[in-house]
Length: 108
Length: 232
Image (cartoon, rainbow over all chains, first blue to last red; front, side, top):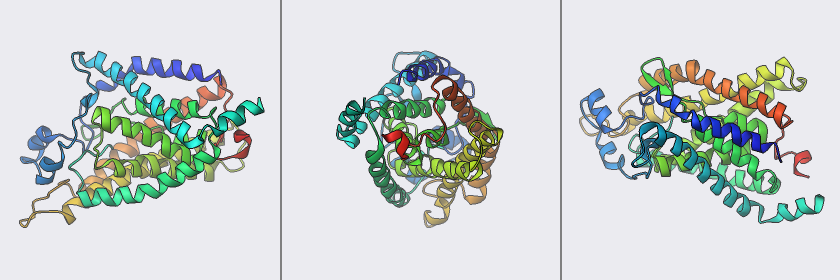
């Protein structure tokens, strides 16, 4: 499918303008971290302190180490899309067992 | 709508994983029967779109933010089963690499955004577009209704999951252990955000991309990978 290139170009452009998403800097409702919760409630629920820090993401909050906010956000968009392509490709291979590849080749 | 770790009790997280698991299994089975190597790039481009569109935070009433998801879009183009897989992949990358949404809460987040969202969206689209001419005003209206319904159904589920926490899980003196907000707070907060701005953002994203793919890719609507004509 050749036209899919146009979609990727569109996505690349979206990634470049993704820092627009930073303009609305407030946290989404119900996604506050412990600092914000302390400000909101005056305390942090026990379960949140216990499970909230379970996992430390390498690019937490779409930041890239040593990159500024905006370049980091753009890089995050690109890294995320690359990871998605990789995972989808792997999963696609797993799910199709290479079957559809040969069938498609036969059809063409 | 990405519930972080600590907002839901481990038992709630377990229930939500259990609820999502059979749908993941069925999606994998359905998609493995109909997915062709040709469709894999299409799935990845729409999953990537879903990932990026969720980065466009928009301010909503109440001082918080929300975002579109692109799940109904994926359901209309590739079918709801493939949409479940596509959005789940986007959510997995967000949780593991960007800390957006928790690991324990991944099952719940997938249930809301990768299952309820595309299935409700697709169902409403299907119901309201039946018999409509391809590309007609009514079909575009159906797309708007579907994508609006889908994201709001997902937001409502998230509000329920969050809002039952203080009722079920608290210390002996009543202090909440997890999400401290009850249903009378979570439902208005989530629904006002999504019935207004985020719902409109989802409609714009869905209609915009479909208009673009129709013109540039000659990609018809309903190119459901579960349907015969596109699997041959």
